[in-house]
Amino acid sequence: MPELYGEYEGEAESQYVGCVVCGKTIDLFEPHPMFREESVSEVGDVVARTYHFCSEDCIEQWKAERDSGE
Image 1 (cartoon, rainbow, N blue to C red):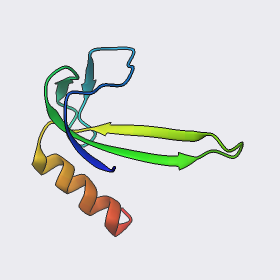
Image 2: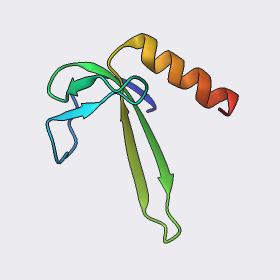
Image 3: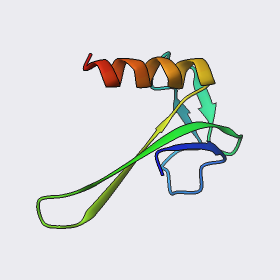
Image 4: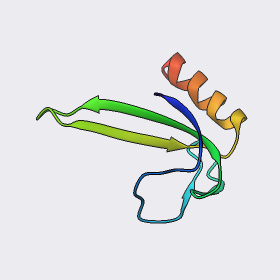
């Protein structure tokens, strides 16, 4: 389930995070674009990482850079 939109339902140390692309402050309790990536660690545990974005433009820019290998 890579691309999501809504309120973050996971655990976080802070209510606010910076957009991965531009650094704009995001309130995790407000709906916003997210990208969730899951992988398996060396010991077999599932590791989930959620990237937060302030806008659709930022997530699209991030995906384009990620897909091009930048």
